[in-house]
Amino acid sequence: MEIKFSQELLTILCYAREEAMRTGHYGIGADHLMLGLLRHRDNDACRALDAFGIDMDALKEAIDGRVFSDRSVPWHDQARVRPTHGAAALLSAAAYEALKHGQTRILPSHFLLALVRADRPAAAEMLRAQGIDYDRLYTLMREHHFVLPRQEQEAKLPRVEDLLGPLGEQLTHLYGDAQAPTQFYS
Image (cartoon, rainbow, N blue to C red; front, side, top):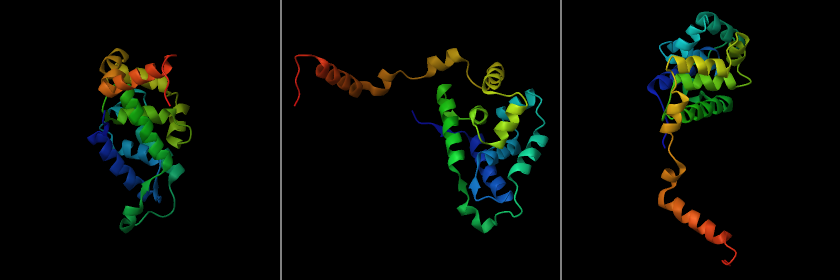
């Protein structure tokens, strides 16, 4: 199963690079991703934050206060601005959230679910301080159909047998033969 970024998330990633440059960083961190999400605003993740009563302008300002440095990155250096390991790990966690919900596109809502589980980003700390944890966020997103309900997740996930196909059958037979007490392999 191939998983891809949704167009919304690709836009947010572009904004995150610009946010990293604006705040003076050559590394696009998790907080820059959140700034990109807040800048985009027309997505289910921001609608969920709005449903919780989060003032997104105040959240942006608070994140800016944590990551802003004195100098911005010059535009001619934009090719050197890359995601940090932490941001890459967060995007991997968002991919896991998408797969868990039976989807092949990573949406902003998957990113936000992954973010609230993260330890270090200032944005995650700020959201938790306002009472937003994974369970509350997931429940709200499910109620508003920002993610698939659990019953639909299970129905949409492929079975291991379907993924493995004939190769899986051959491996199963080989394993079974190797476990049989009368079979010897050298």
